Image (cartoon, rainbow, N blue to C red; front, top):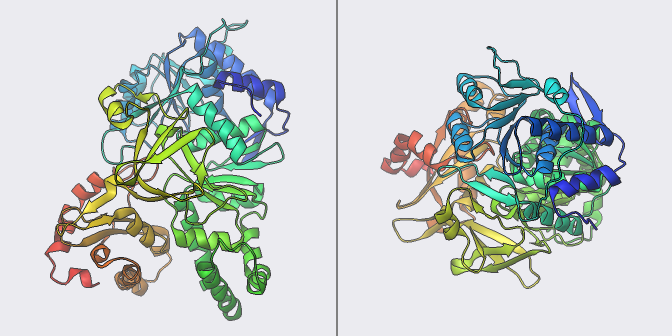
Length: 574
């Protein structure tokens, strides 16, 4: 049982108790490099002294704008030891959001690594009091910029002045992605995060025998909280430098645990199907039947019969070997995981556990776990978390994990956390007799058509996006006579097609929509669609850094296409 109560004392726990060899591993010069615990601790101690020397103290906000790596963690821990407040920033953030976050959080010190220098970033650096760069070469001379090595060497010899850090003190401000508006700074205390780490240990046990592959950015609160658990438990950690190479790294590292977002599982699922389609006739036939069986079998039925064992040996075993063959726990979160995808992976034998949370809850509310894994649900609550259903079955959360509030937004905080301390999640849910929570829809994405019927965008979009053809789907329904959808095709799949096959894409999508419609009520069925050639990205302003569509911007960009769908008498031919 962990005994620390702040992130600063968590660091002391690491220093005193962790003996894991090759503790932290990262990519450099196309190979894995290892960082031992003693070196990690020494760098954190030096950085604390260096930050203190340039004026960082208790309550100072410092931005971290870098890919996930041991260096990201070193900076964060060095700040936590000073009682400073770290502000994680996505490396692919839009320039206007970057400027807003720096001003809103009053950031004057910034750690940058692996970020291309553009005009906007140059301007921001000029305005910083102090910028520490790990591997960034600037075009012009900047007197307020330190290299990583120079900054470490600037540390004054000696010990830090004692700082009293209370569990309720602010540890970090994490900005939400702003999928429907301006980002909000979620203020999290040491207690918020440490409570989560302790609950995680009780729910899903990890130890120095485990190996983790880190795929998600540490600016993502889900990855960051679990990273604190990894570190405290002595898990050997490997940081991925390119998520596109995740498959290769999984085979190399053979991890026992990993956090994923549903889109990664959907891409793996698509890749597996494409490989089967290219297999010789006999293998393709057997694998196709095995895939069908994995899609229809009830995953809540634990006992495996002769059919399961037959496909285990001929097909599923090879699929698991392609995923390293060593997984013990994979946690999916960050967005709803479609039931067909989760059913498939559970049935081939992947130890997949779906959870649910939000940044405001630091972030985990509930998760499935070993021996308590119910397909279709998001699992049972963490020990320190309390939940109940409010009006319209909105999920309400209370506990030591709930944020202190939104930075500089007291009115919005009061709208989100009521006087009794219940945080209103905005998600509609159900809770069964055994405490398993199932997220049904997002309150803000429950649209009311002009006929007065309610439509859940999440359910429809999720049903579409497990198709190998579709990268993103966005439902339009609010105030409309019927449902339509904007379809963004998967560019990687399209590149493998012949010109004739590309011409048939619309027909294939229409066929997929007809199949999906069979599973919905008449008023929920898709009555029209539009294929969008542009690929959503953070650069064109259509995606948040956490890879979610920004609904209002997509609607503005494709207003003409949306109106055309409703103007057509044929309703898109579906």
